Amino acid sequence: MPNQNPTLVFLAGIGNSGPEHWQRQWFEREADRAVWVEHSSWDEPVAATWVKELDEALAAVPGPKVVVAHSLGCTLLAEWARARTGDPALTDVAAAFLVAAPDVAGDNFPTQAEGFATDAYARPLPFPSVVVASEDDPYGSLEHAENAARQLGARLHNVGGLGHINASSGLGEWNDGWRLFQDALKA
Image 1 (tube, helix red, strand yellow):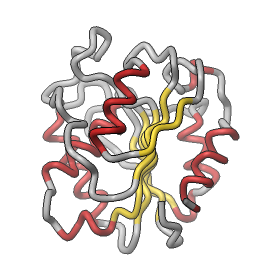
Image 2: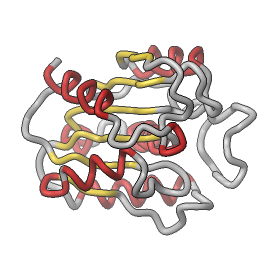
Image 3: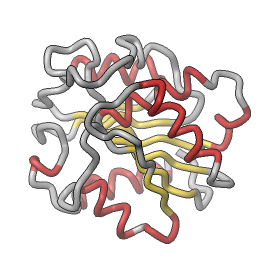
Image 4: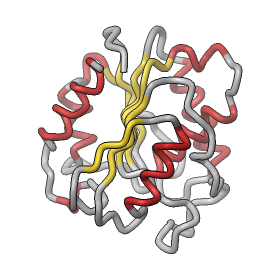
């Protein structure tokens, strides 16, 4: 991932990331150079609506951006990139850090999430990316993460058994994740 003093763009998953979630804590710490993408419905996401809201949020931020996505935010970014194939807006995204990408076809994928493609991760992203996966994520197996990383053209980082790598995982600020993110920006 290139380090170009980018704006950090945070994409949370279904239900949003609350104050105990590492993603929200990173955002608060980096607020002077960060944007949180808001959605009209956090609990009943519709893919087309979320893609439109992401598109609007990214368009409002000039210059290079690094996306920090968690869970359904990972799927959202992949869907957005696919919808924008060949669009100059893609060149503003310098890199992506994708944590706990869910398996849209998996048994535990939230039924209230509508329109997210089961093949969302099937095309390479047009920017450098890292997929961070847990060995015991209930929303996506390690095998799923390995396949998603390969198809997205991303590097994979296995963090061991951290569940869904969320607030329930008890990570707090997740300092190990922050170091991994910083290392990825230097690579």
